[in-house]
Length: 112
Ligand code: AMP
Ligand code: ZN
Image (tube, rainbow, N blue to C red; front, top):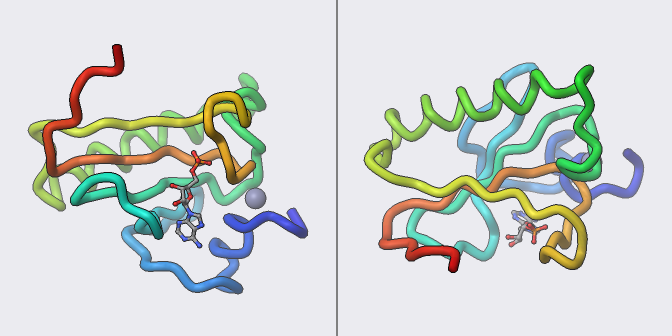
């Protein structure tokens, strides 16, 4: 997508600190970390949010969770981490390209 920040990061037009990349997804550290480990995993194909996931595009979401599980082992936080995706401004989504926050390295507390 022309004017999408994360599409520009995937294309290398805006710098990022890469964690992982394959043909389907790209992972990079969040610029404003909320935990000692905080990175984002995004599908390379633009989708605005999880609300746009269809049966046709759903496989990439499973792939991203498998990548996160692999990275958790490799990076040493497989004992506990949080995966979050915000959908829409009302939930705090500021970048409208589907992304999964991966947070680890501290007591994360409960949601409620
Ligand atoms: P959300 O609020 O769920 O849309 O999350 C967007 C996230 O993208 C926030 O945690 C931001 O800190 C992060 N972010 C924004 N710009 C960049 C950037 N250029 N590089 C890395 N992370 C970014
Ligand atoms: Zn995009």
